[in-house]
Structure formats: C-alpha cells, structure tokens
Length: 404
Image (tube, rainbow, N blue to C red; front, top):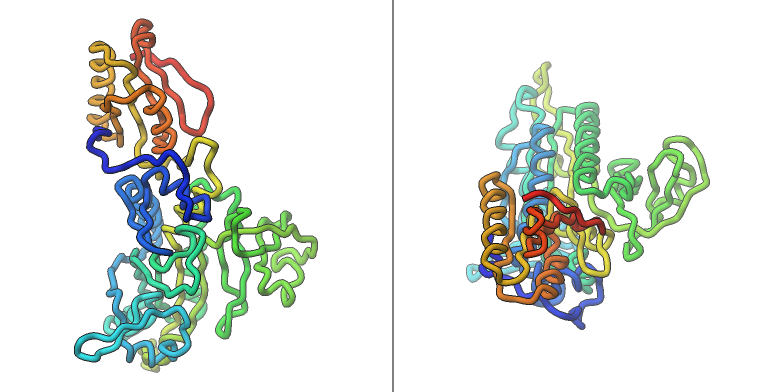
C-alpha cells in the first residue's frame, strides 16, 4: 500500500484525556479514534491488527471442530427473562423499540445460542455440536477505563459446546484449553500468560482464566512457579494450595484477564429445555461449555506489555504490515530501487507499505516506529552505491545491510 493513500494522522503528543498507555499509543499512532468514553473507532491500521488477531483465533477454533456463526446483537427480553438475567445482569443495555418490544444489547449470547442449537438436536447422534462467533459486544460499564481493555463496546470471540454428558464436556474443555494456549503462543504472550484457577460459580468447582502479567492489570493472581499455573485472588481463601502440586508458596502479581473458559453444564439448557434422546430412548439435558476471548482486549494488552519509547512493538503475526519501505531523499535512482523492492514484495503476497510522501527522513522514521511494521527497509543514495538496503526488525536495535 502507498502510505499517501493510508487514512491516518500521527499525533506528536499523547492524548490528554486518555489515562492508559494502550489508548495513548493507539490514538497517537492513528490505530483508533475515541468517540466517547469506552467507545472507539478502529481506523485502517487498528482494524488490520484486530483482524489479524481474530484470524489467529478463528484458525485455532476451526482446528477444534468449531463452526463459525454470527448471532444478532439484539436479544429478545423474553429470552433473558427465561434465564433470570433481564433483572440481574447489571451491565446489560436495555432497549425498547417503536412497537414497544424490549431487547437486551448483546453482552453475551447464551440466551440466543441455546435455543438456536436446540433446533438441531433431537438424538444423541446430533451431538456434540461446537459453534463460535466473533462479534461486537456491549456492556453498560459505570466507568469505562483503561482504553480498549475495558470499554462499553468491544470485540469478542465466544465459543459454545453442546455435549451428551459431563464426560464429553470435559474432553472438549481440554481441547479448548489447549487451543487457547496455542493462541497466546502465536500472539507472543505465552511466556507471561498463566492458566488461572477461578471460581466456577454455582455449577462447577473451577472456571479457568488466562491472565497476562501487567502492572496495569485489574486482577491479583497467585502464581505457583513449580506448576506454572495461578489462582485468582477471589478464591485464594478457599484454595490456599496449588490445585496441581499442593504447594502453598505463591508469587503475587498483577494481571489482565485475556480469556476465560467455564463449564455451564445444564445452567442454560434447563430453562430452554434443550434435551436429546439417548441410546435407550431416554430424554437427557444437554451439557454446555462456554469459552471467551476478548480480541480487542487482547490487542490492548499486547500494547501494554510490548512497546518501547518509540511506540508499539507488534508480534510478527499481527503487525499491520510485514515490511515498511522508506526511500530517503528525492534521488531518482533511490526511488527506482525502492519501487523495485515494493513490487517484489507485493508479487510475493506480503503486506508492505511504501512511504511515497514528500517528508523529511526524521518524520518518516518516527512515523515508521509508530506504525510498527515488522521490518523497516531504508533505501538511500549511500546504500545503493553499495548495492544494498538497510533492514531493521522493529523489535531489534541492529541494522543489517542486505543486497538489493
């Protein structure tokens, strides 16, 4: 892409009305624009990164046999009344139409997906079923804060499993857990992200969170370094030892929750009467699991934990561009060689940005750090005299000279 055609505007300073580093860097780098508290527009650079994150999630969900669907954002009131959450879900946006029909604006989707899937279940032969979506969610947070870590509108992947019994649910739960670990590995977060035991509520002993270490995290977790797992502070009084090895010497850290999985069992299949006939022609309730990842929150988390004084350092799989080509000076030969490189990478199918603007070298290089392509390529009169160009990885300080 030609940089002159990219819709962006680098800001020289941090936005004064943002209290979090992720929002400051994302706004400064023209990844997002704040519309109101907790509400952001994703600009082209931001949408490219968000889409790359969601494509990683999508690929790993497909590998565990989940089918992608897209459910409505408007949830009929009667569905939420049936589960008791119309009156008890304190962050639910409630709407009334011109015809006086009432709806909840989708904060989570058990009340849609459960009756939806019941239409496809009659016999044990129809199970298991696994479906997921990647969608914008809405929550009426009293105090939206921390940029895109906690907004009133955010992106989320939610996966739901439907199984014959608890044993089958447990098998898929482990598959999902492994898939989540792979996602964080691909996002370059695995070294600082811990599987964390949390309360399972009324329907399970534990749920599991994935918590990424960060000083700005809202959660306190207690890490067992021997087992590489953690316990959320909310259950540390009940679970005073590591659930795996029994050790009681923990390391306390701040962390950001970047995903959670939990066993719903029959919590939602019961009110919607989602049943199947087993091999003996006996009616049974379906067992459910729920598995969530906030993709926009993951994006904000990566900014918080992966940056330097010049801006964001994106993991290679999610950077907006793989290469950023910067010709220095107005020399015709320099522009010609830079254009050759640009066309070469385009023909290879790489995501490449070409800085064709009439700007100073300092401005181009500073903007390049904020845009944060994985590799910066500089072509100058000096380099082409040697038949070379400069290559620098955004995460490294070293500059290499490579042959044109």
